[in-house]
Amino acid sequence: MSARVIVREAEVDDGLADLALLDDGERARAGRKRDAAPFVTGHALVRRTLGELLGEDPASLSFERRCTTCRSELHGKPSLVDVPGWHFSLSYTSSLAVVAVAQGIDVGVDTEDLTDADFEGFADITLAREELLAFEHLDGQDLLISRARVWARKEAILKATGHGLVVDPSEVLVTGPLDPPGLLAWRADEPAPASVSLVDLDLTTANHRAAVAGLTDERLEVVSG
Ligand SMILES: CC(C)(COP(=O)(O)OP(=O)(O)OC[C@H]1O[C@@H](n2cnc3c(N)ncnc32)[C@H](O)[C@@H]1OP(=O)(O)O)[C@@H](O)C(=O)NCCC(=O)NCCS
Image (cartoon, rainbow, N blue to C red; front, top):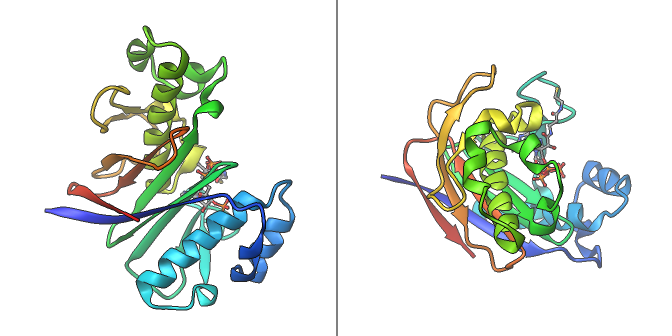
């Protein structure tokens, strides 16, 4: 058995033409961003993808947010209003947006720009002690690719559960960057997901890595395009 996850990506469009697809709340949030383009591209990608899958006008879709930690409706994992059973997740950097959509299972997607993984304290922030070994003999581009891959795996899991970075990523142990993706251990105080399936995504851009997680014990079948 496998669970289908539809994944789409879009290059960030600096033209902001997609603002017309967004609702008032999204436009207001875009207006508060120093660079609105990634936000606008990302949210338009969510609307286009879900609109196509549901057979609805993308601009007519409504979303709500709910925080797994404090139950606030002002932030947290987004979901569709009045469309039960459909789950999605969005991730974007300054140049790329990625969305994952699934039916019946919570999903989380994360993409990381390699250059964002190029900082001194990466291991302290992201990795558990046992995870350090797999990075020891890596340097240059290989090191950045490995960091971005593992970071995306961890954050994809935390976006699927809805915790986000409220959970310390170093308490979510995943397989090493050269090994097939998987969750090895959950050490956070927050309740662990019953099951997690994880896949590294093949993106069209070489300067990013990405992963998608589904809260299921079924294998994820990723459908791109
Ligand atoms: C969610 C989070 C991991 C995203 O990290 P990021 O790398 O900066 O951003 P990404 O582009 O990958 O993802 C952003 C998108 O994730 C989604 N998202 C936001 N919170 C989420 C959550 N808790 N779980 C899953 N997805 C979430 C939204 O679609 C968001 O896009 P938007 O901000 O434009 O609406 C990070 O912002 C986070 O941990 N936030 C939680 C902080 C929090 O909730 N604090 C208060 C707790 S009481």
